[in-house]
Length: 367
Image (cartoon, rainbow, N blue to C red; front, side):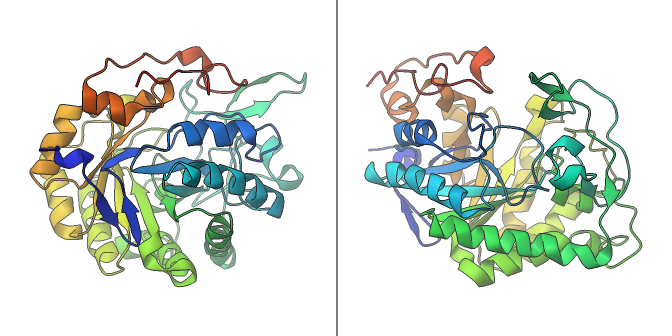
């Protein structure tokens, strides 16, 4: 009998061939911020995943924090992504676009007219080699840079963020994506609003948990109204400390509140990122079970999963789908390798970000 993880699954309106998800991963291969033929080959090679979630895709120029990342704020970008989705669909794959706004994790050189990045507040990102924007330097070389000081969004500007996501969601559907994932994890804009230490606002988007979660839920509602709730997922990282996101006492309660609110909205899924690989504490299975009970819908889990661990969690009902990230880099045929026991290739970390075909589309399939 085929293991449950390799069996089909209905995700909202989308029928998946298996329960293995290719997690979103920034690869920085798009100098013009437009998905291209290399991008299409890369995702097409990995279309045997039950679901591909694209690399983070900025919804606006204001939302970007890294050079060479394909966005989705222009018609040229829509056309570029259409080539990608066609390549995935030609191999009977399914793909969601991850919609992204980095908030304070940006640099003035990446912002429209050299403006300051925006966030929930002006709290700076602590200086660290692990907290950076990625830019073109004045001498033309590429490299990391400390994020520029951010300004707090004015209350009347916040609905503009919601509109950016709503419009980007429609562009994603126009580009042929099967749905979208709102990136509300890993220390970016939505998490900057949710965290009471990075959010010191005194308006409707600050203070109480309900206010701090308001931007997330307003965005979910607007996107769902535009493209249909069953085409919408959201990514959260309840244990995240990445990019100078401080711990706070009511963290678990905040995410369980979100679980209850998201349960009312009939989404395709919630995607939890166990971000311990980036220095965050492990997400406990006790919390995972509590989240699953509170949400009640489809849950995807990512974060250093093994086939055995993922299979156990799925079989026990702890999660519904298992997301793998780095294993997909060097193993375009990861699903077949896991199913047949073929050893996994090891990716070259030196080619994770930037460059061309090397380390991107030249890993061979073994099956």
